[in-house]
Amino acid sequence: MSLNLDKALGIHQDALLLFERRTQLLAENIANADTPNYKSRDIDFNKVFNGEVSKQVSLQANQPGHIAMTQSALDASIEYRVPDQSAADGSTVDMEQEQAAFADNTVRYQTTLTVLSRRLGGIVSAFRGE
Image (spheres, helix red, strand yellow):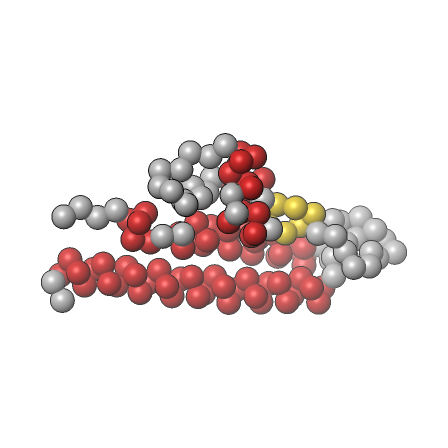
């Protein structure tokens, strides 16, 4: 019996990479809230998961539906956020929006880790014959 970890872990491993990169972006946005003319950035998950990014970067996927996250794919998924109201100093950082996005991203990251942990636990149990 052969094990294909890509199939076993599904899209969750790519999702972790996206959540990790988004955490970095949101932290940068929060850290630069008082920086004049700083433009906040974020990742559009819908574009990534609908395959629009892979069309832009021409990724090589080894499984149907596999996103195959690379640094170029992550970079291509980053967009400037359109502010509801820009600040007088030209910054587009909305602290309430950034903090809410950061909290939401953290919950999604933790949930994905939990799912992966359970899947890996199931694989280990299967190999042990439990």
